[in-house]
Length: 169
Image (cartoon, rainbow, N blue to C red):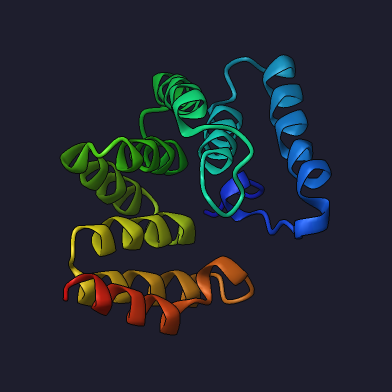
């Protein structure tokens, strides 16, 4: 089961960055207002906060948004401990806080809970690349692309291969 939309899955054009990116926040907040026990909305919100702290999407300093992502992901897991998207969002935040063991465990939990969740595979590939495990990273990014071939985020297998291999030099 693939839950869309999450900010981690949203394609954002450079000229529309500010406008386009606020919509998912609005949708997730409305969903939470309607049903405060809707775990997927909290997981989506966590994904949005995570993406706001990245270089590609950016907008806010990671030190500001990571705690918000962690809080939203933990709330989602409090409601539904088996929600793969929440595990992946929390792992993503942990990755960029350099909490390596927690990040890897979280990505593996997400993939175990929902092997078809392409973003979990993509984000896990980032972890693997950062940990200088290029062959595993490439396998994960290719799997993400296979699961969601229309996503531009998952179609970077060749670039990921080159980047991952350079990382181990």
